[in-house]
Length: 289
Image (cartoon, rainbow, N blue to C red):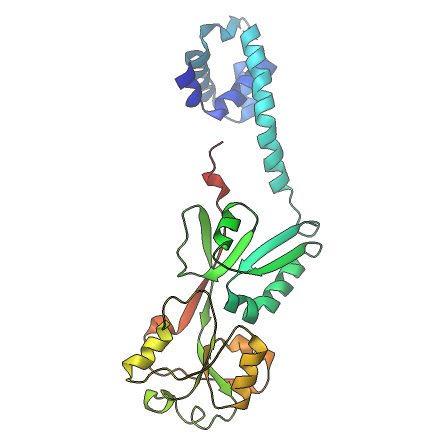
C-alpha cells in the first residue's frame, strides 16, 4: 500500500470524502461536477489502494465502512490547509494588504527608476510597507530563503530554475548629455563621438574591465574615455550637466534634471539599443509537499 499512497491522486481523497458524506455516487458526481463514469473509475482506484471493503452497495446508494469514514475524516484534515491557502490567495486584496514587501533591485535600476516603481507600488498597495535594497551577491540566497520577496534585474543575469522570472520592459538606450552639447547637437557619428568623455554607473552587473558599450569604442580604435564612475545619480547628473561628458542611458533620467537631453545613438547593433528588464520571485511550486 505504501507505493500506492505515494502515487495517490489528491482528487480521489476529495471524491472519497463526498461519497462518504452523500452515500450516493450519483449525488457525489453531481456535487463534484463530474460524470458518473469518472466517479466509478475513481471508486475503482480507491478500492485498489485501500481494499474492497470501503463501501457496501445498498438499494439506494452505498454505505461507508468504518475504514471509509476514518479515511474521509483524515482526507478532510489533509485538504483543509490547502483550501485555506487557496482561499487566502484568491481573497487577497492589494488595497488592504498591510504587510512588508522586500524588493531587491540592480543598482542602476533602483537609482534611475526607483521613484517611479515606488509610486506604482504605493498606488497598487496603499497600506503596504516597502524595503528597497540593492541586489548584491548574497541577494540570490535571500530570495531563495524568502527574505526577499521580489527582484528587479536585467534579463541577462543568470539565475537558477528555482527563480521564476518574467519580462517587464525593454528600456530604450540614448546618448544623454547636457543641452546644446557642442558635438552631439550636430552629429552622433562615431568619428566625432568616440573621444567624448563617458559617465558610467558603478554596477555589480559588470564582469571584467569592459562592458559591452566599451567594446563598441574599442571596435572604433578608441579606448573608452571614462570621466566618472559613480553609484550616486546626483553626482552623475551634475557631471553630465556641467561638462561635455555623455552617458548611455534611458530618457527617464531626464526627469532628474532639466539641464539634460537625449541625443541619437551612433551606429551600433540593435541588441545594444535597448536593455531588457525582468522581475523574479522564488518559484514556490517547485517545493515538493
